[in-house]
Length: 211
Ligand SMILES: O=C(O)c1ccccc1NCC(=O)[C@H](O)[C@H](O)COP(=O)(O)O
Image 1 (tube, protein in one colour):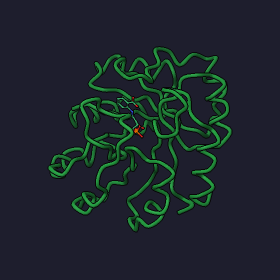
Image 2: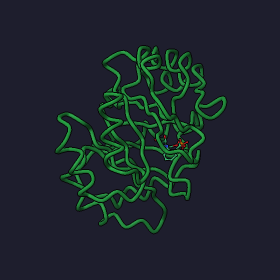
Image 3: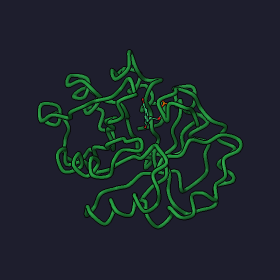
């Protein structure tokens, strides 16, 4: 499982960003959705200076105006966007066409009724899917979904596994035998308060995952 990538989402504060960046995650996420308790209005140069260039910065958006998304990608030199609303395949394609090397991650909230055929038109327009738990808040729920649902996922596109991931899930994650599982995404279960990550707990997770 050592090549499983690792994303920490919902960063807000300089000292905490510096400490988490020290654990060398592959991705750090910033939530530009103002209804989230992890909302960040500005990823200033003061924050970015703590992030080594090998860590990919991800802007998380929910049904945001495309021009605003483009503006933030330029302003903060984001390496990836993660789209948590009902953004259309064309919206994803436009971002791919506008920015060389931008990774587009399309998130979907899963429940027992989830119809995987809705992913088909996104397959050629995004780099990754992210499978999260379906909730009205669009993300950051701290709740897991039933991973058995992923047996219905038939496309080749790699995915981030997300939604309430905690220390207790390590054995189950290590037991997943699916080469499309690209990255693990953690958030609220590793927080002291919204936007403040528990660095020691993340260290424990990484150690348990064998990193
Ligand atoms: O975290 C949020 O507050 C959030 C709100 C709205 C859209 C997305 C959001 N987070 C995106 C993430 O990538 C989270 O890591 C993902 O939803 C899982 O969160 P959690 O269940 O807390 O582990």
